[in-house]
Amino acid sequence: MSASTTSLTLKGHDILFPPLPYDMHARADLATGDDQLQRFINNATLSKDLQRREVCAQTFGDNYDAMRSLAAEIKQHTLDHLDHYLEQFVDAATGTGAHVHFAATAQQANEICVGIAKREKLTQCVKSKSMVTEEMRLVPALVKVGVEVVETDLGEFIIQIDDDAPSHIVAPMIHKDRTAVARAFERELGSPYTENPQELTQIARNHLREKYRTADLGICGANFLVARTGSAVICTNEGNGRLCTSVPRVQVAIVGIEKLVPDMNHLAVLLKLLARSSLGQPITVYNHIMTGPKRKHELDGPEQMHIILVDNGRTEILREETREMLRCIRCGACLNACPVYRKLGGHAYGAVYSGPIGALITPMFKGLDKYPDLPHASSLCGACYEACPVKINIPKYLIQLRAQMVRRRITKWPDRLFYGLWGMSLRHPATYRFGGWVQKQMFRAKARAAGTAGRGDRYTDRGWLSKAPGPLAGWTRARDLPTPPSNSFRYWWKMRS
Ligand code: SF4
Image 1: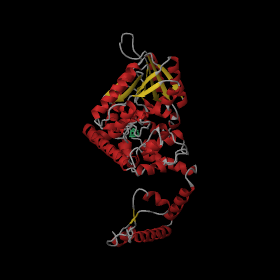
Image 2: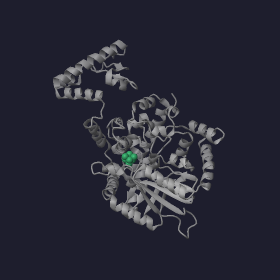
Image 3: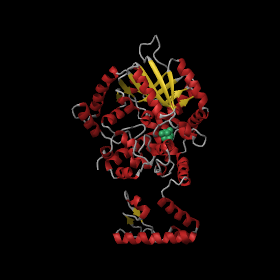
Image 4: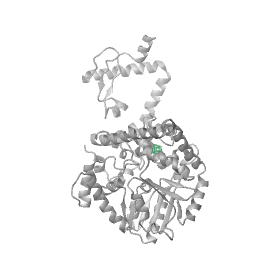
Protein backbone atom coordinates (compact mmCIF):
# COMPACT_ATOMS: atom_id res chain seq x y z
CA MET A 1 0.00 0.00 0.00
CA SER A 2 1.43 3.41 -0.85
CA ALA A 3 1.79 6.47 1.33
CA SER A 4 -0.83 8.28 -0.63
CA THR A 5 -3.53 5.66 -0.16
CA THR A 6 -5.82 8.00 1.76
CA SER A 7 -5.30 10.71 -0.83
CA LEU A 8 -6.06 8.28 -3.65
CA THR A 9 -9.36 7.22 -2.19
CA LEU A 10 -10.33 10.63 -0.84
CA LYS A 11 -9.53 14.07 -2.15
CA GLY A 12 -8.86 17.45 -0.55
CA HIS A 13 -11.57 18.65 1.75
CA ASP A 14 -13.37 15.26 1.84
CA ILE A 15 -10.49 14.07 4.01
CA LEU A 16 -11.15 16.77 6.60
CA PHE A 17 -14.93 16.93 6.24
CA PRO A 18 -16.18 13.33 6.12
CA PRO A 19 -19.83 12.29 6.35
CA LEU A 20 -20.98 12.44 9.98
CA PRO A 21 -21.09 10.70 12.40
CA TYR A 22 -17.47 9.95 11.65
CA ASP A 23 -16.25 6.37 11.96
CA MET A 24 -12.51 6.50 12.51
CA HIS A 25 -11.85 2.77 12.21
CA ALA A 26 -11.65 2.46 8.42
CA ARG A 27 -9.07 5.22 8.09
CA ALA A 28 -7.16 3.96 11.11
CA ASP A 29 -6.93 0.54 9.41
CA LEU A 30 -5.65 2.15 6.23
CA ALA A 31 -3.04 4.14 8.13
CA THR A 32 -1.79 1.23 10.23
CA GLY A 33 -1.45 -0.93 7.12
CA ASP A 34 0.59 1.69 5.29
CA ASP A 35 4.27 1.07 6.10
CA GLN A 36 5.52 4.06 4.15
CA LEU A 37 3.13 6.46 5.87
CA GLN A 38 4.11 5.05 9.24
CA ARG A 39 7.78 5.57 8.45
CA PHE A 40 7.31 9.20 7.35
CA ILE A 41 5.18 10.17 10.32
CA ASN A 42 7.22 8.25 12.85
CA ASN A 43 10.56 9.66 11.71
CA ALA A 44 9.31 13.25 11.50
CA THR A 45 7.44 13.28 14.80
CA LEU A 46 10.17 11.48 16.74
CA SER A 47 12.87 13.86 15.54
CA LYS A 48 10.73 16.96 16.25
CA ASP A 49 9.84 15.67 19.69
CA LEU A 50 13.50 15.01 20.46
CA GLN A 51 14.52 18.45 19.18
CA ARG A 52 11.85 20.08 21.36
CA ARG A 53 13.15 18.33 24.45
CA GLU A 54 16.77 19.22 23.71
CA VAL A 55 16.17 22.87 22.85
CA CYS A 56 13.85 23.43 25.82
CA ALA A 57 16.34 21.78 28.16
CA GLN A 58 19.20 23.92 26.75
CA THR A 59 17.24 27.17 26.96
CA PHE A 60 15.19 26.83 30.11
CA GLY A 61 17.01 24.11 32.05
CA ASP A 62 15.28 23.57 35.38
CA ASN A 63 12.97 26.50 34.65
CA TYR A 64 11.18 24.76 31.80
CA ASP A 65 8.22 23.80 33.95
CA ALA A 66 8.02 27.30 35.44
CA MET A 67 8.10 28.76 31.93
CA ARG A 68 5.19 26.54 30.87
CA SER A 69 3.27 27.58 33.99
CA LEU A 70 3.87 31.23 33.15
CA ALA A 71 2.65 30.74 29.58
CA ALA A 72 -0.40 28.83 30.85
CA GLU A 73 -1.18 31.65 33.31
CA ILE A 74 -0.89 34.30 30.59
CA LYS A 75 -3.31 32.46 28.33
CA GLN A 76 -5.66 31.56 31.17
CA HIS A 77 -5.75 35.14 32.45
CA THR A 78 -6.52 36.45 28.96
CA LEU A 79 -9.33 33.92 28.52
CA ASP A 80 -10.72 34.71 31.98
CA HIS A 81 -10.97 38.38 30.90
CA LEU A 82 -11.60 37.83 27.22
CA ASP A 83 -14.38 40.43 27.00
CA HIS A 84 -12.03 43.11 28.34
CA TYR A 85 -9.13 42.19 26.06
CA LEU A 86 -11.37 41.89 23.01
CA GLU A 87 -12.66 45.43 23.58
CA GLN A 88 -9.14 46.71 24.11
CA PHE A 89 -7.97 45.00 20.93
CA VAL A 90 -10.82 46.35 18.83
CA ASP A 91 -10.22 49.94 20.08
CA ALA A 92 -6.48 49.71 19.46
CA ALA A 93 -6.78 48.03 16.03
CA THR A 94 -9.43 50.48 14.88
CA GLY A 95 -7.18 53.29 16.07
CA THR A 96 -4.46 52.11 13.69
CA GLY A 97 -6.87 52.25 10.75
CA ALA A 98 -7.74 48.54 10.58
CA HIS A 99 -11.34 47.39 10.12
CA VAL A 100 -12.40 44.81 12.71
CA HIS A 101 -15.27 42.40 12.00
CA PHE A 102 -16.89 39.79 14.25
CA ALA A 103 -18.10 36.44 12.89
CA ALA A 104 -20.18 34.16 15.10
CA THR A 105 -19.94 31.23 12.68
CA ALA A 106 -17.66 29.95 9.93
CA GLN A 107 -20.31 30.85 7.39
CA GLN A 108 -20.46 34.44 8.61
CA ALA A 109 -16.68 34.69 8.47
CA ASN A 110 -16.73 33.43 4.87
CA GLU A 111 -19.46 35.91 3.97
CA ILE A 112 -17.48 38.82 5.39
CA CYS A 113 -14.35 37.79 3.50
CA VAL A 114 -16.21 37.12 0.25
CA GLY A 115 -18.02 40.47 0.71
CA ILE A 116 -14.69 42.32 0.95
CA ALA A 117 -13.42 40.56 -2.18
CA LYS A 118 -16.56 41.45 -4.14
CA ARG A 119 -16.76 45.05 -2.95
CA GLU A 120 -13.13 45.73 -3.77
CA LYS A 121 -13.28 43.69 -7.01
CA LEU A 122 -10.41 41.45 -5.90
CA THR A 123 -9.57 38.44 -8.05
CA GLN A 124 -6.07 37.23 -7.15
CA CYS A 125 -5.40 36.06 -3.62
CA VAL A 126 -2.22 34.87 -1.96
CA LYS A 127 -2.82 33.13 1.32
CA SER A 128 -0.56 32.12 4.16
CA LYS A 129 -1.17 29.04 6.31
CA SER A 130 -4.07 29.35 8.72
CA MET A 131 -5.97 26.64 10.56
CA VAL A 132 -9.07 28.76 11.09
CA THR A 133 -9.50 29.26 7.33
CA GLU A 134 -9.37 25.47 6.91
CA GLU A 135 -12.00 25.23 9.63
CA MET A 136 -14.20 27.70 7.69
CA ARG A 137 -13.56 26.16 4.25
CA LEU A 138 -12.68 29.63 3.05
CA VAL A 139 -10.85 28.70 -0.15
CA PRO A 140 -13.85 27.02 -1.87
CA ALA A 141 -16.03 29.98 -0.81
CA LEU A 142 -13.65 32.45 -2.51
CA VAL A 143 -13.13 30.29 -5.58
CA LYS A 144 -16.91 30.15 -6.01
CA VAL A 145 -17.05 33.92 -6.51
CA GLY A 146 -14.18 33.93 -8.99
CA VAL A 147 -11.17 34.62 -6.74
CA GLU A 148 -8.07 32.59 -7.54
CA VAL A 149 -6.53 31.54 -4.21
CA VAL A 150 -2.94 30.35 -3.97
CA GLU A 151 -1.56 28.84 -0.78
CA THR A 152 1.96 30.16 -0.24
CA ASP A 153 3.29 28.09 2.65
CA LEU A 154 5.35 25.50 0.74
CA GLY A 155 3.69 22.53 2.44
CA GLU A 156 0.21 23.97 1.95
CA PHE A 157 1.03 24.83 -1.66
CA ILE A 158 2.00 21.22 -2.39
CA ILE A 159 -1.12 19.99 -0.61
CA GLN A 160 -3.23 22.39 -2.68
CA ILE A 161 -1.87 21.40 -6.10
CA ASP A 162 -2.08 17.72 -5.14
CA ASP A 163 -5.73 18.13 -4.02
CA ASP A 164 -4.74 16.66 -0.68
CA ALA A 165 -5.37 17.83 2.88
CA PRO A 166 -2.98 18.90 5.65
CA SER A 167 -2.20 16.17 8.17
CA HIS A 168 -0.34 18.10 10.88
CA ILE A 169 -1.00 21.48 12.50
CA VAL A 170 2.53 22.75 11.84
CA ALA A 171 3.87 20.44 9.11
CA PRO A 172 0.90 19.97 6.75
CA MET A 173 2.68 17.59 4.35
CA ILE A 174 4.27 15.39 6.96
CA HIS A 175 2.73 12.38 5.16
CA LYS A 176 4.49 13.05 1.84
CA ASP A 177 8.04 12.65 0.63
CA ARG A 178 10.00 14.47 -2.05
CA THR A 179 9.01 11.92 -4.73
CA ALA A 180 5.36 12.92 -4.26
CA VAL A 181 6.37 16.59 -4.47
CA ALA A 182 8.43 16.02 -7.62
CA ARG A 183 5.51 14.25 -9.30
CA ALA A 184 3.04 16.97 -8.30
CA PHE A 185 5.32 19.76 -9.63
CA GLU A 186 5.92 17.92 -12.90
CA ARG A 187 2.21 17.27 -13.38
CA GLU A 188 0.75 20.60 -12.22
CA LEU A 189 3.50 23.14 -12.94
CA GLY A 190 5.06 21.45 -15.97
CA SER A 191 8.52 21.56 -14.42
CA PRO A 192 11.19 18.94 -15.21
CA TYR A 193 11.13 16.00 -12.79
CA THR A 194 13.61 16.45 -9.97
CA GLU A 195 13.88 15.18 -6.42
CA ASN A 196 16.57 17.67 -5.48
CA PRO A 197 15.18 19.75 -2.54
CA GLN A 198 16.92 22.97 -3.64
CA GLU A 199 15.59 22.64 -7.18
CA LEU A 200 12.10 21.82 -5.93
CA THR A 201 12.16 24.88 -3.68
CA GLN A 202 13.34 27.04 -6.57
CA ILE A 203 10.49 25.80 -8.78
CA ALA A 204 7.95 26.70 -6.08
CA ARG A 205 9.64 30.05 -5.49
CA ASN A 206 9.56 31.02 -9.18
CA HIS A 207 5.92 30.07 -9.42
CA LEU A 208 4.88 31.88 -6.23
CA ARG A 209 6.88 35.11 -6.87
CA GLU A 210 4.70 35.81 -9.87
CA LYS A 211 1.57 35.21 -7.79
CA TYR A 212 2.73 37.68 -5.12
CA ARG A 213 3.43 40.30 -7.78
CA THR A 214 -0.07 40.14 -9.23
CA ALA A 215 -2.15 39.49 -6.09
CA ASP A 216 -4.62 42.13 -4.92
CA LEU A 217 -5.80 40.23 -1.83
CA GLY A 218 -3.63 38.79 0.94
CA ILE A 219 -5.15 36.43 3.50
CA CYS A 220 -3.48 35.21 6.66
CA GLY A 221 -4.35 33.87 10.08
CA ALA A 222 -2.49 35.01 13.20
CA ASN A 223 -0.63 33.13 15.87
CA PHE A 224 -1.40 35.90 18.37
CA LEU A 225 -3.34 39.14 18.68
CA VAL A 226 -1.90 41.81 20.99
CA ALA A 227 -4.71 43.59 22.82
CA ARG A 228 -2.78 46.70 23.87
CA THR A 229 -1.46 47.59 20.41
CA GLY A 230 -4.13 46.05 18.17
CA SER A 231 -1.47 44.01 16.37
CA ALA A 232 -1.76 40.64 14.65
CA VAL A 233 1.34 38.43 14.83
CA ILE A 234 2.25 35.70 12.37
CA CYS A 235 5.17 33.34 12.75
CA THR A 236 6.52 31.60 9.64
CA ASN A 237 9.78 30.02 8.58
CA GLU A 238 9.54 30.83 4.90
CA GLY A 239 8.77 34.54 4.83
CA ASN A 240 5.64 33.89 2.79
CA GLY A 241 3.46 35.43 5.50
CA ARG A 242 5.26 38.76 5.13
CA LEU A 243 4.80 38.82 1.37
CA CYS A 244 1.12 37.85 1.66
CA THR A 245 0.43 40.62 4.11
CA SER A 246 2.48 43.44 2.65
CA VAL A 247 2.32 43.18 -1.16
CA PRO A 248 -1.44 42.95 -1.97
CA ARG A 249 -3.61 46.06 -1.83
CA VAL A 250 -6.09 44.54 0.63
CA GLN A 251 -5.14 42.38 3.56
CA VAL A 252 -7.50 40.19 5.58
CA ALA A 253 -6.40 38.50 8.81
CA ILE A 254 -8.80 35.82 10.00
CA VAL A 255 -8.27 34.84 13.61
CA GLY A 256 -9.99 32.86 16.37
CA ILE A 257 -10.95 35.02 19.36
CA GLU A 258 -8.81 32.89 21.68
CA LYS A 259 -5.57 34.13 20.10
CA LEU A 260 -5.39 37.27 22.25
CA VAL A 261 -2.57 38.14 24.63
CA PRO A 262 -2.54 41.30 26.76
CA ASP A 263 0.68 42.98 25.55
CA MET A 264 4.13 42.59 23.98
CA ASN A 265 5.75 41.31 27.19
CA HIS A 266 3.33 38.42 27.27
CA LEU A 267 3.83 37.86 23.56
CA ALA A 268 7.58 37.44 24.12
CA VAL A 269 7.02 34.54 26.53
CA LEU A 270 4.70 32.77 24.14
CA LEU A 271 6.93 33.31 21.10
CA LYS A 272 9.82 31.68 22.96
CA LEU A 273 7.75 28.62 23.74
CA LEU A 274 5.99 28.40 20.38
CA ALA A 275 9.18 28.12 18.32
CA ARG A 276 10.80 25.64 20.66
CA SER A 277 7.71 23.50 21.09
CA SER A 278 6.69 23.31 17.46
CA LEU A 279 9.92 22.70 15.57
CA GLY A 280 12.59 22.66 18.27
CA GLN A 281 13.95 25.99 17.00
CA PRO A 282 15.36 28.75 19.23
CA ILE A 283 13.12 31.22 17.39
CA THR A 284 10.81 31.17 14.38
CA VAL A 285 12.61 32.68 11.37
CA TYR A 286 10.01 35.39 10.64
CA ASN A 287 7.95 36.85 13.48
CA HIS A 288 5.84 39.42 11.67
CA ILE A 289 3.89 41.95 13.76
CA MET A 290 1.24 43.83 11.77
CA THR A 291 -0.24 46.95 13.28
CA GLY A 292 -2.71 48.59 10.91
CA PRO A 293 -2.52 49.22 7.17
CA LYS A 294 0.14 51.26 5.34
CA ARG A 295 0.60 54.79 6.79
CA LYS A 296 0.85 57.86 4.56
CA HIS A 297 4.64 58.08 4.80
CA GLU A 298 5.20 54.33 4.23
CA LEU A 299 6.10 52.84 0.86
CA ASP A 300 4.98 49.25 1.47
CA GLY A 301 2.02 47.58 3.07
CA PRO A 302 -1.67 47.09 2.31
CA GLU A 303 -3.98 50.03 1.73
CA GLN A 304 -6.70 48.25 3.70
CA MET A 305 -6.36 45.88 6.63
CA HIS A 306 -9.34 43.83 7.79
CA ILE A 307 -9.32 41.62 10.86
CA ILE A 308 -12.10 39.05 11.14
CA LEU A 309 -12.48 37.72 14.68
CA VAL A 310 -14.04 34.27 14.54
CA ASP A 311 -16.04 32.57 17.26
CA ASN A 312 -17.37 29.41 15.52
CA GLY A 313 -17.95 27.45 18.73
CA ARG A 314 -15.22 28.99 20.84
CA THR A 315 -17.51 30.78 23.31
CA GLU A 316 -19.14 27.43 23.98
CA ILE A 317 -15.74 26.04 25.08
CA LEU A 318 -15.06 29.26 27.00
CA ARG A 319 -17.31 28.16 29.87
CA GLU A 320 -15.28 27.66 33.02
CA GLU A 321 -15.10 23.84 33.01
CA THR A 322 -13.52 23.67 29.54
CA ARG A 323 -11.87 27.09 29.16
CA GLU A 324 -8.36 25.66 29.54
CA MET A 325 -8.68 24.01 26.10
CA LEU A 326 -8.65 27.43 24.45
CA ARG A 327 -5.13 28.11 25.72
CA CYS A 328 -3.81 26.12 22.75
CA ILE A 329 -1.21 28.00 20.68
CA ARG A 330 -1.30 25.34 17.91
CA CYS A 331 2.35 24.42 18.30
CA GLY A 332 1.80 20.75 17.37
CA ALA A 333 4.02 19.43 20.19
CA CYS A 334 1.26 17.16 21.47
CA LEU A 335 0.95 15.56 18.02
CA ASN A 336 4.66 14.82 17.87
CA ALA A 337 4.60 13.30 21.35
CA CYS A 338 1.47 11.19 20.88
CA PRO A 339 1.91 7.44 20.21
CA VAL A 340 -1.51 7.29 18.54
CA TYR A 341 -0.84 10.18 16.15
CA ARG A 342 2.54 8.62 15.30
CA LYS A 343 0.73 5.49 14.17
CA LEU A 344 -2.15 7.10 12.31
CA GLY A 345 -1.09 10.51 11.00
CA GLY A 346 -3.56 13.38 10.75
CA HIS A 347 -6.04 12.21 8.09
CA ALA A 348 -7.38 9.43 10.30
CA TYR A 349 -8.90 12.04 12.64
CA GLY A 350 -11.31 13.17 9.89
CA ALA A 351 -11.12 16.83 10.89
CA VAL A 352 -9.01 19.97 10.54
CA TYR A 353 -7.38 19.54 13.96
CA SER A 354 -5.68 16.19 14.52
CA GLY A 355 -3.66 14.53 17.27
CA PRO A 356 -4.51 14.85 20.96
CA ILE A 357 -5.74 18.44 20.74
CA GLY A 358 -7.87 17.53 17.72
CA ALA A 359 -9.33 14.52 19.55
CA LEU A 360 -10.37 16.97 22.22
CA ILE A 361 -11.59 20.08 20.43
CA THR A 362 -13.18 18.51 17.33
CA PRO A 363 -15.97 16.84 19.36
CA MET A 364 -16.31 20.11 21.31
CA PHE A 365 -16.65 22.18 18.12
CA LYS A 366 -18.74 19.76 16.10
CA GLY A 367 -20.56 17.62 18.64
CA LEU A 368 -19.59 14.52 20.58
CA ASP A 369 -22.21 12.45 18.76
CA LYS A 370 -20.63 13.42 15.42
CA TYR A 371 -17.11 12.31 16.44
CA PRO A 372 -17.66 9.52 19.01
CA ASP A 373 -14.34 7.78 18.26
CA LEU A 374 -12.05 10.73 18.88
CA PRO A 375 -12.13 10.81 22.71
CA HIS A 376 -10.93 7.18 22.51
CA ALA A 377 -8.07 7.96 20.10
CA SER A 378 -5.65 8.23 22.99
CA SER A 379 -3.76 5.87 25.24
CA LEU A 380 -4.03 8.47 28.05
CA CYS A 381 -0.28 8.09 28.58
CA GLY A 382 0.05 11.81 29.34
CA ALA A 383 2.81 12.53 26.79
CA CYS A 384 0.68 15.32 25.28
CA TYR A 385 0.24 17.01 28.66
CA GLU A 386 3.97 16.85 29.32
CA ALA A 387 4.77 18.35 25.92
CA CYS A 388 2.16 21.11 25.98
CA PRO A 389 3.78 24.53 26.51
CA VAL A 390 0.56 25.93 28.00
CA LYS A 391 -0.16 22.91 30.17
CA ILE A 392 -3.51 21.81 28.77
CA ASN A 393 -4.45 18.65 30.63
CA ILE A 394 -5.65 16.81 27.54
CA PRO A 395 -5.97 13.33 29.14
CA LYS A 396 -8.19 14.74 31.89
CA TYR A 397 -10.58 16.29 29.37
CA LEU A 398 -10.60 13.19 27.17
CA ILE A 399 -11.73 11.14 30.18
CA GLN A 400 -14.43 13.72 30.84
CA LEU A 401 -15.62 13.41 27.24
CA ARG A 402 -15.71 9.62 27.57
CA ALA A 403 -17.79 9.95 30.75
CA GLN A 404 -20.12 12.33 28.90
CA MET A 405 -20.52 9.77 26.14
CA VAL A 406 -21.64 7.16 28.65
CA ARG A 407 -24.01 9.60 30.38
CA ARG A 408 -25.57 10.66 27.09
CA ARG A 409 -25.66 7.05 25.85
CA ILE A 410 -23.57 7.94 22.79
CA THR A 411 -21.37 4.88 23.39
CA LYS A 412 -22.43 1.97 21.14
CA TRP A 413 -24.37 -0.85 22.83
CA PRO A 414 -21.71 -3.60 22.33
CA ASP A 415 -19.21 -1.34 24.10
CA ARG A 416 -21.69 -0.59 26.86
CA LEU A 417 -22.30 -4.31 27.32
CA PHE A 418 -18.60 -5.19 27.26
CA TYR A 419 -17.57 -2.49 29.75
CA GLY A 420 -20.63 -3.20 31.91
CA LEU A 421 -19.58 -6.84 32.26
CA TRP A 422 -15.99 -5.86 32.83
CA GLY A 423 -17.02 -3.37 35.54
CA MET A 424 -19.15 -6.02 37.19
CA SER A 425 -16.29 -8.51 37.24
CA LEU A 426 -13.93 -5.90 38.72
CA ARG A 427 -16.37 -5.33 41.55
CA HIS A 428 -16.54 -9.06 42.38
CA PRO A 429 -13.12 -10.75 42.90
CA ALA A 430 -14.45 -14.28 42.36
CA THR A 431 -16.02 -13.33 38.99
CA TYR A 432 -12.85 -11.49 38.04
CA ARG A 433 -10.69 -14.54 38.83
CA PHE A 434 -13.03 -16.85 36.96
CA GLY A 435 -13.16 -14.50 33.94
CA GLY A 436 -9.35 -14.29 33.91
CA TRP A 437 -9.05 -18.08 34.07
CA VAL A 438 -11.52 -18.58 31.18
CA GLN A 439 -9.73 -15.99 29.07
CA LYS A 440 -6.35 -17.55 29.79
CA GLN A 441 -7.50 -21.04 28.82
CA MET A 442 -9.17 -19.76 25.69
CA PHE A 443 -6.21 -17.70 24.49
CA ARG A 444 -3.64 -20.38 25.26
CA ALA A 445 -5.72 -23.04 23.49
CA LYS A 446 -5.97 -20.76 20.44
CA ALA A 447 -2.21 -20.16 20.46
CA ARG A 448 -1.57 -23.90 20.72
CA ALA A 449 -3.95 -24.54 17.82
CA ALA A 450 -2.19 -21.88 15.75
CA GLY A 451 1.21 -23.33 16.64
CA THR A 452 2.37 -20.08 18.24
CA ALA A 453 2.33 -21.21 21.88
CA GLY A 454 5.42 -20.18 23.84
CA ARG A 455 8.12 -22.51 25.11
CA GLY A 456 9.62 -21.58 28.45
CA ASP A 457 9.11 -21.84 32.17
CA ARG A 458 5.73 -21.30 33.74
CA TYR A 459 6.22 -17.52 33.94
CA THR A 460 7.56 -16.85 30.47
CA ASP A 461 5.75 -19.42 28.38
CA ARG A 462 3.63 -16.84 26.57
CA GLY A 463 2.40 -17.49 23.07
CA TRP A 464 1.03 -15.12 20.46
CA LEU A 465 -2.36 -14.65 18.90
CA SER A 466 -2.59 -13.08 15.49
CA LYS A 467 -6.40 -13.12 15.46
CA ALA A 468 -8.15 -12.40 18.73
CA PRO A 469 -11.87 -13.01 19.18
CA GLY A 470 -14.70 -10.50 19.80
CA PRO A 471 -13.93 -6.91 20.75
CA LEU A 472 -10.17 -7.67 20.85
CA ALA A 473 -10.13 -8.34 17.09
CA GLY A 474 -9.34 -4.66 16.48
CA TRP A 475 -6.11 -5.03 18.45
CA THR A 476 -4.84 -7.96 16.37
CA ARG A 477 -5.65 -6.30 13.03
CA ALA A 478 -2.35 -4.41 13.29
CA ARG A 479 -0.29 -6.42 15.81
CA ASP A 480 -0.10 -9.75 17.63
CA LEU A 481 -1.48 -10.22 21.12
CA PRO A 482 0.56 -12.07 23.74
CA THR A 483 -1.32 -14.81 25.55
CA PRO A 484 -1.37 -14.79 29.36
CA PRO A 485 1.36 -16.99 30.95
CA SER A 486 0.24 -20.21 32.63
CA ASN A 487 0.78 -18.66 36.07
CA SER A 488 -0.92 -15.36 36.82
CA PHE A 489 0.55 -12.28 38.49
CA ARG A 490 -1.61 -12.95 41.54
CA TYR A 491 -0.16 -16.45 41.83
CA TRP A 492 3.37 -15.06 41.50
CA TRP A 493 2.65 -12.42 44.15
CA LYS A 494 1.23 -15.01 46.56
CA MET A 495 4.26 -17.28 46.14
CA ARG A 496 6.63 -14.38 46.68
CA SER A 497 5.10 -13.01 49.88
S1 SF4 B 1 -2.56 21.42 22.98
FE1 SF4 B 1 -0.63 22.25 23.71
S2 SF4 B 1 0.92 20.98 22.69
FE2 SF4 B 1 -1.01 20.63 21.57
S3 SF4 B 1 -0.95 22.09 19.89
FE3 SF4 B 1 -2.03 23.09 21.59
S4 SF4 B 1 -0.45 24.23 22.69
FE4 SF4 B 1 0.60 22.77 21.38
